[in-house]
Amino acid sequence: MYDQDMLTRRCQSEPDQVFEDLKELVRAFTATPDFQFEPHFTPRYRVWQQRLAFCPEGDIFRAAVAGKLTVHTDTLDSFTENGVRTSSGEEIEADIVVAATGFNLHVMGGIPFMVDGKPVDWADTVTYRGMMFTGVPNMCWVMGYFRASWTLRVDMQADFVCNLLNHMDKLGVHKVEVALRPEDAGMEILPWIESDNFNPGYLMRGLDRLPKRGAKPEWRHNQDYWLERDAFPKINLDAPEFVYEGVGAGKKIPEPA
Image (tube, rainbow, N blue to C red; front, side, top):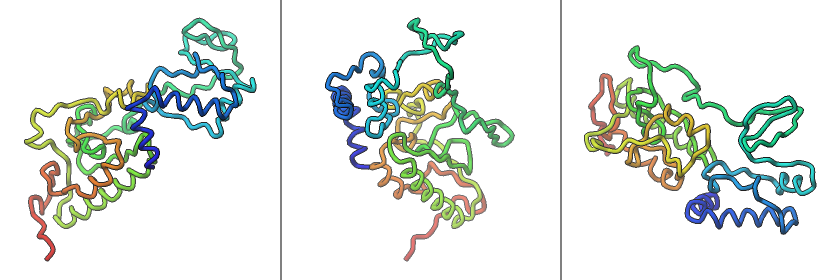
């Protein structure tokens, strides 16, 4: 986990050098010092700005060197009688075409949510730590990390939900939602994630339908496990961003003796 975090930081601070390091690994695995990366193994984005694929033992590159496969990096213009035509005008013959990318994002799986009889437009909400959303009570969205084990964040979210449910039991309330605080007045409201941080096509195409984030740490989906592992246990469930409703709403729980 530590090594993965260091790699992520290097990808942001020195992306060109990381790309050169990765190319050296490919040359080593294929025993091909002059392996040609141009033009089909040179993405338009920096390393880890989109997902970084792991190739065990460099298998795809070894197959390319052995002549067992060819790689074409381009965008598609159209299907033809014999295959596909790329935007550069090249026709690639194909017996089978598998559509593996280019899907359209369905926020919350496309499930319609209603609050007090009104449909929820997720683009009108602001996320609380990438888990809860303003105006949507009693709901926690499970979302992990893009560049680390998904369950690292899911485990912390599970602890948060259990603590929140226990806290609601102690207060005797049945409803909780998050709300912007008075000190958040004037806070800049931004897209859910920075495109310079992570910008796969499916996410960018659906960004206008995703919840918004605020400029303060508690109002965004942080991608830093090392920060969140310390921040999550310290979440104050009596803080003003948590709005409770029920018999015990507003009651303070006495501190243990």
